[in-house]
Amino acid sequence: MSKKLLYTLSAVLMLAIALTACGAPAENTTSEQASCAPNCTYKDLTICYPQLGAESDWRTANTASIKETAEQLGVEQLIFSDAQQKQENQISAIRACIAQGVDVIALPPVVEDGWDAVLTEAQNAGIPVIIVDRSVSADASLYATHIGSNMVLEGERAAAEFNKLLPDGGVILELSGTTGSGAAVGRAEGLRNKLNANITILDSQTGNFTRAEALPVMQAFLQKYKPGVDFQGIFIHNDDMGIGAIEALKAAGVNPGDLVIVSVDGTRGGFQAMVDGWFQADVECNPLLGPQVFELALKLMNGETVEREILTNETVYYPENAAELLPERKY
Ligand code: AHR
Image 1 (cartoon, protein in one colour):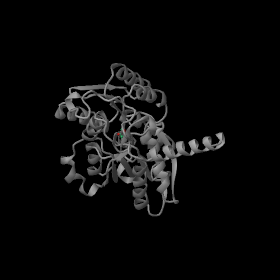
Image 2 (tube, rainbow, N blue to C red):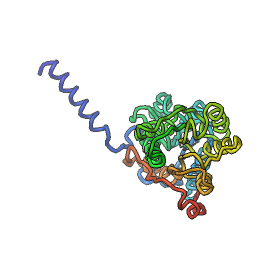
Image 3 (spheres, protein in one colour):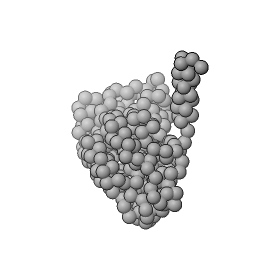
Image 4 (spheres, rainbow, N blue to C red):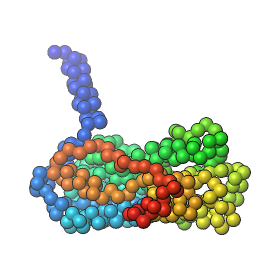
């Protein structure tokens, strides 16, 4: 066989291997097997959760879900930290977990970019990584799986609400989440994908997913644009920012109920805003991911195969039954 033919055959074989791996369920091939595998239990698991922060009620509920699930399942080694919305803090926490030799890292990434180096370090150490909640732009071969919401779909659902509520068209503002985060990028993209052509986005500014930061952003919008004249609606990337924006509107003597406000999350605060007549729809984003995260972690520790992408099943909530549903809301 000629050298050239041999090279061509090996290139074809490599391509076939790469294509087979692509889109297939993730097999825990790169991770070092725990000595208890394949019979490890939750008691054996040491898991690292470098939480991105405590910026919203959604995040508080996500933290509670992780901690409560660990307790219920008898996980004794949950290494939890709060990065205060700073990627460098998350990276330091991950490095500390790698040095400690944890079994699994579950990472809710504050932003999409900039994870390649630390994910490679985890992979080289044989520690599988579960990306939780927001997505990362790193190559999928660097982590075992992603579990969370379809943020683009959430933005598309918000667009559908504006299309219904502004049937003759109009102008909206956007109060966006943390710049560069999978949640903000996806929701902005989804909104633009599905918004009717007769609805335009006048301005978009970030409120970093917090009440405190959304308030001055809304105030600045009100300095520039006249509600009801220059804009009729606001798309707000989470309920906490929505509550901050409502405060700013009320303080300026504007009735938030005169505008079309669509928010995301479905927290108790968001439900209350619907009951009060301030939000016209709230697109669900479910933070209660603890049970699925731990199930995936144990599977990975035991060397089992897991799906590469697990999307949360979500809906849209409306003012019509908000009062009835509010007492049952868990977050
Ligand atoms: O990534 C999920 C988003 O992050 C939630 O919508 C928001 O409330 C949180 O801060």
